[in-house]
Amino acid sequence: MNENILDIENKIKEALSEGFTFVVFDGVKVVHLDKRDGILPVFEFVKNHIDDLSTVFNFSYGDKIVGKAAAFLFVLLKPRFVYAKTLGENAIAVLKNNNLEFYYGETTPIIKSRDGKDRCPFEKAVEDTNSPTEALKKIEQTLLNLKILK
Image 1 (cartoon, rainbow, N blue to C red):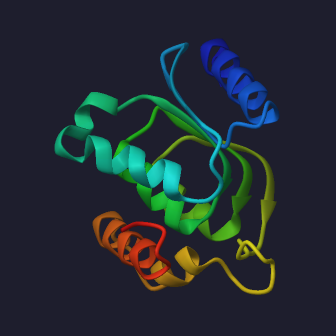
Image 2 (image 1 turned 90 degrees about the vertical axis):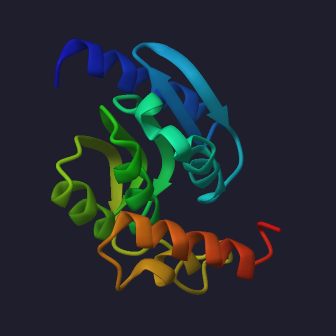
């Protein structure tokens, strides 16, 4: 890991420790911060840039929790690297298979639903998916089904 990446990773960790759940850096400059839980912040970031994702390629991203669903969204963003405070084991394969550089604080075998009683609905939605664009559609449909998006 080069020194610049280490500096950005430390800034991401600092932002996550301050209560932010999703952070975006262009070089060493913060370009986006979000405090909402769940997949919505990264989903909205992708959707807001979907018409020209090349404008955000090579940015660095930090997220509180990254499971397989979020990993697919990061694949679409083509990041310089992704840092996850908690990284789902099923997300590791997605990130590796797409040659993305990533770092994490800890891993977990399962990303759970908010109430902790079941698997995350977004993880369920993408469990049989290998395509980032298909995952984006399934995530959007799940957000609509859960009435998180209108």
